Image 1 (cartoon, rainbow over the protein chains, first blue to last red):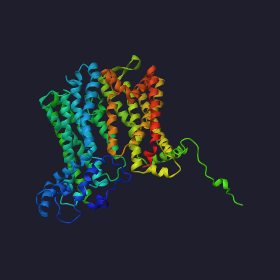
Image 2 (cartoon, each protein chain N blue to C red):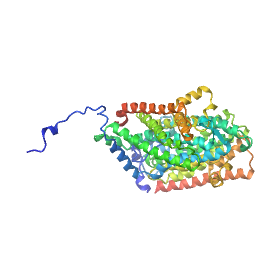
Image 3 (cartoon, rainbow over the protein chains, first blue to last red):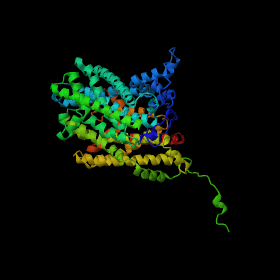
Image 4 (cartoon, rainbow over the protein chains, first blue to last red):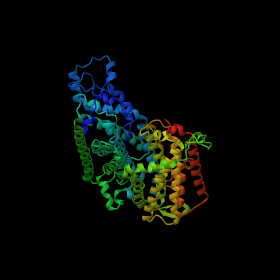
Length: 338
Length: 276
């Protein structure tokens, strides 16, 4: 499959602005990352003469007073730091839609915490003696859940359309491929960039949670890690799937509606998992959001949970993330080299 | 002996109002849309119906177990699921209508170049707009019917008045769709569409969907009561239990006005909307 898509830097540059009948949702990254493309060398065999794979740092580098590396040094650097260079390229691409990234990172927590943690809480706390949440207020109860869900939703956005864009719509993966960077590094670079975005977003989220007074424990900062882990544990397997999609006929919208939404609604987020009927509780057990939420509750207000269960949460999330990365690397290698 | 007379070759100007915008052939646009549905992803069509049902199951059953009953319109206590179900129907009417009239129209215009092709024929921009809105409303009607059936199956429908939720949600969808098209005529990039979604989120969460408006201080209540979604939620909630008041008429009028304003705006912007 990959052969007809394997474009050189030139074909990637001649931007097919209207990508056929496919629907570019996250086209946001395209305009900003395209400046990086012209500096990517044309598919030349052997070590590339220009610095920086992906050319993300091209112009600044050329204008500086530094002396250019010889090609072999550049190639060695690319092999060694490829993942980081690619992550940088991807992060610079995100600048194209930075306004909406910031609006979501700040607006989302404000709106959800206010609506659910204060509005809905007034209804829940007045009708419920508080027994259901182990002594915590409803606001405290849902804050870690909203945090983990937001991480998952961002991952769902960044690991679907953006992956498709790299392979097909804007072909941003193919420029770096013409350098000594490996497909695995292209995969990891993208994953790393998104992980960084999720960590930053979770940190902002936590600040707002603290502002609402929704976390009481000194360990609350660690929910940044657990919720980011949820994002990655959900996102990397999804990335592997997205990389197998060659024609987008609405698969990503279906992922959104039949996987992301149910995971948000049935992961013990807005109410304890145990209040669901037994035949729906399995959704929580397979859901990264539930595992991260439970960990978050332990960390942010000292929710009582046996130690082995916390260990299960961590292990499950790590296995999902690790397995997802292994799969994604494999799919990327097959598609980019095939 | 020619069969063609001179009179047949004469061109007379059409003196109808809006003749330059409207060629009285909405049917062609609608038929084209229905034919196109055959090749579209059926799962996507179904998913629009599933989303509010998932919310109803999750929040109605899960959260409902914690909340118990809530005071509904007319002062009667109703279950939490019965309280949020009409609100979810309203939200899905809004989402569907805005999705169709912003993203879909934007995509068909800028990427599929569908409207350009339509306008090369005798169709006018108003035919296209009315046809597209009709298709969106048809879809909204099917979703609303499906959701009402689910509500009935869950035992949340207690009165025949609830059947009126279906036409009411079509009216709500009409209001949002006509305004949405007007908005789309100003939109240039996909990122700007993200802002539309971004504005819909607080409206969805704050418009008395999941809890009564009384939790807010009074100025915020007024603000929310000025927004369209709140009127839709209240209207459907009243219909779902069959308890009406003077406000019912206000809610309906709000949407009638919204349709009128939206259609005027859209008609004025039609050339900007489709001829790009």
